[in-house]
Length: 108
Image 1: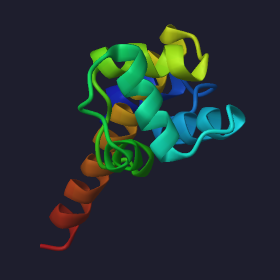
Image 2: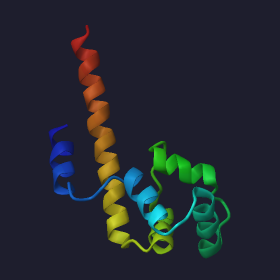
Image 3: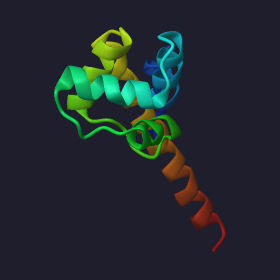
């Protein structure tokens, strides 16, 4: 868990992807559906729906490298920033799951 905290500190200026996507989407004046449609159009892959965009924004899923590249293009955010935001979200999840594991141990 200490490593997760250290890595999170390295990226402390980067928001998690759950914050980056909706912020950049709103700055572009797009709804979740419009972003999904745009991603389908520019990637020529019709597998992204409004529901998937919602899952990314709510932290239910983290977009993989393929979709992060298209998200970067669609939202005019540097690809490296989108990748860092995904790392921040993963580290946050690891730290959070570690906290829950610590809580379970302490309740025995």
